[in-house]
Amino acid sequence: MKFVCIDCSRSYPVSDKAHYRCRCGGLLDTVHDFRSADPERWKRLFDERLSERNSPLSGGVWRYKELIHPELPAEAIVTKYEGNTGLYRGSETLRHYAGVRGLLLKAQSENPSGSFKDNGMTVAVSHGAALGYRRFACTSTGNTSSSMAMYAAVAEAESVVLLPARSVSRSKALQTEAYGATLIRTEGGYDEGIRFLDRYAEELDWYVCNSINPLRIEGQKSIVFELAHQLGWTLPDWVVVPGGALSNASALGKGLLELHRLGLIKRVPRIAVVQAEGASPFHRMLAADARTLTPEPRPGTVASALNIGHPPNWAKALRFAIDGANGVTASVSDADILEAKRLIDRSGIGCEPASAAALAGLRRLVAAGTIHPDETAVCILTGHLLKDADAIELALGRRSRPSTKTEVDEEGDGAPVPLTVEAIRTRIGTPGQAKP
Ligand SMILES: *Cc1c(COP(=O)(O)O)cnc(C)c1O
Ligand SMILES: [Zn+2]
Image (cartoon, rainbow, N blue to C red; front, side, top):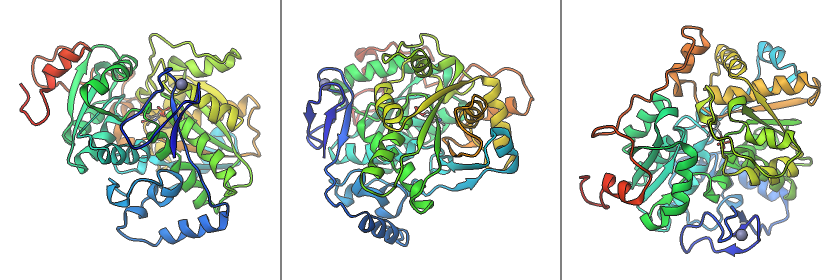
């Protein structure tokens, strides 16, 4: 197992220190050396783990450990038995809305912190803790930070969140704080936060838990592993996923290609990546037949988890989801997202707005003729209904505009902290010392 740059192929060891990017700036991808060629042996192993109780390998991510992080010692696993999420048949109403006969919903919202971020975060935090890091950091639209703070707390380590003040739901910010994270309301948004972490995390001795961390992607592959396992190692024709930072699109594409290479599935389903119209640089790139992403300087959407103008994983998503899994993209309006959310909520499953983009995108792709009504599709529901109370009111028509403020202020005067190492150091103090 090693990290390999997706641009220049230079490789890096996995277990000396944290690696996120190559010297050339390219993203690193985890490359495995799967030796066993017998798919039946894998299936038996994964089936056996379904009956294990309270073993670190009984959750829905580490059940597939050999395909995710084979080298991590089992004692180093930091887990909350994430994954193990429900797979539901779409109701008559949802099937009619989307326009397909066969519809499944995979509820990653049922993860312990309420979003699919747990699938990847358990791997990142386990790895970082095993390397000896005691401070975990991210910038976040809210779910990455909730997840990271939860696992850091379980590992009895610290967590620091650079919080883009205007675009995080109140419940997500509060959840993050409840798990003990230090929230720093910073100038700029998600995209500026990523740029800061890229440059300064090493200097600050922080372990970065954003999806530039290749191990997040490895853990998120388990979503399609578990999906295939639940369906007896066959998959629907389409896997439909919302796209923000594009970590999930990358992970699902990579996971599907590996399942196919290992002989666990016979055919790679196609992937549809759905973005919100106000934050759709990846969709626009592909619609223009381009292979270089032009960032969106001022992203804006009701689906706060998709409010990303410069998705760090776009090149991986292009390689794994589009080129690898014959993928397509779509974009949907905020009104479509809220309509789809209302129907998913009403069907008893429920989700936050970003997740509903998948169903709205499926409907659009069927209407456009890209997906045939006789084909089958699974929508990945990424986050829990309770993650965004504001959006529930919007979907129910109780109000017409989202509130724009997080309303969760850090201690102190509440002015945003500039993104400089000095300002951040002053804000958090040094490890082990009380905050100033
Ligand atoms: C993070 C997130 C997304 C976007 O996933 P990416 O991997 O960033 O593309 C979608 N929905 C929810 C609920 C999320 O938390
Ligand atoms: Zn490189």
